[in-house]
Length: 248
Ligand code: 13P
Image 1 (cartoon, protein in one colour):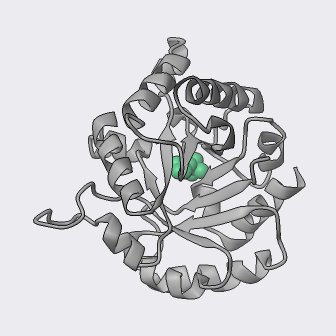
Image 2 (spheres, helix red, strand yellow):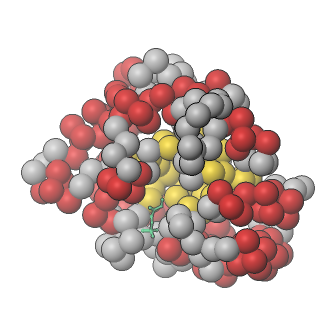
């Protein structure tokens, strides 16, 4: 039985003060919620303050990105060692916005996963097709390609997959629960065929998740949780999503 997992990806939102405000109001809202793992991924500048506030809360801290070297002359980059010392236990790798705006390829994503894993960080690997790829009926092919490239020589310990169809991100256009389940099943099949321990890997759905659609998405056997963008920016809506994940 895979434990539900709900993660907030704040993207490039919230100052240090706004982070404090969010966490101080969010934690009491979920203090009695059990049976679900929760993580929050604020921007780098808010990691330290978030780590202090989340200590002993049971809510984990995630980073939104990482570099694939441990230290050195890489101006502007952040290493897995730095993330660990900032209190992170998770890192999101390969988000479609990184692939789109920062030219991250599966090869780069793969290097990042290797360094993160070697340093003991758990990874949320994001994959998903564009609208054009879906319309050309290439969804499964794209998913399999991304898995093969990103997970080259990677074992599944510490890996969570987030299926985020690009056309559903920030658009208000959620995948139907059937579309999500079918894509997750394709991911699970690929993992089973190619790696040990595929049955325990959690597969999250991401793309316009809200308090209104979380229960329907979570009703699907292959949907183990969600990676939430816009609706994770308000403590009340993120808390409702967390609660919806356990009641589903
Ligand atoms: P939205 O929930 O805003 O669609 O973003 C999803 C996402 O990209 C999470 O990583």
